[in-house]
Length: 186
Length: 186
DNA sequence: TACATATTGGAGTGCTTGCTCCAGTTATGC
DNA sequence: GCATAACTGGAGCAAGCACTCCAATATGTA
Image (cartoon, each protein chain N blue to C red):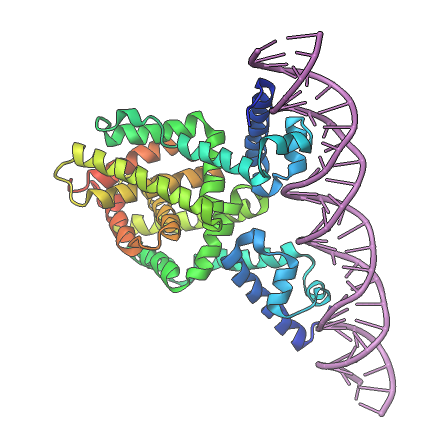
């Protein structure tokens, strides 16, 4: 099905509206009526561009999950410090996508099998990346995979706490946590 | 409105059904039809005992949040190790309530103001308890409140990861994380 | 036993949901 | 500028939703 330019633009407007609604209202608030009104399109246009409402939401989730683990170019060079800074930057620079990531992927992923699978896969990939970076920077550290797991878990937990309590000094805690986990009898 | 014994028993059956459904299907799956059929009651009986569907769900959430931080009797005696073990025990012994806690309270709490408030309050109380325990056991440790925050965040993150990946050695990681956070230049 | 009140199931209500259908309009390649 | 295909909004649809209403029944009290 070839697409015209206007169609692709409308598609983008719908995705943007979906992002906004997910952030402000959550999954429950993302009804077709709300999405289409926000995007300024009729239901017919929506279904001309997406197979279902869920398809649009999953597209947004997919993008959010990808955004949390960007730039695979630096693979083999990056340090754990780089990765932690990237995580901090992700949450600081792009809080909307970050919120969607935690809200849908982490929260909703516990019930929805499809989302849970995606999140787990992305988690495993990230854990491997952290493990490799730790092995490079701290070759004598015992159990690098375990350290990676604990560091990642801590970052996720801090991110959630921060969403509940915006006053939390997220970056400071994240950096200190890296030191805690990596410099212990390292 | 005085209650008969049978009414209170029915109420308990409904709450139990709600717990089960929340665990198995999540909030989205908890429709009135599902809840009442599971509990074996008619809609009329449900609304004789609860003001709304949401009231029943919030009741379950309230209980789950309370269960994550039990036994305030030991206050002033407990060590950080005790608190970590209590958290491990909570997740190991009562995985159903634990799942509800994370699923609804942490996941749903990011959008629902009322739930978010409850979760934040319970988080603060727990953080204070951890801080006090750290000050007692590690009087020379710098920034005990920050350490408590990082330890709690890590435990939450590990719990989430474990729900996504049941193979995760949760207890081992949790204990090691305590050591990471508390014994660094302690 | 007689009475007031709580409990019961389920048919029915009004509303919202995701989605379809379609006639009219617009974009694009030749 | 014509043919073809994509795009458009919105009326309409069946299904599902939370919830109400009520007549019949069970429960507890004096």
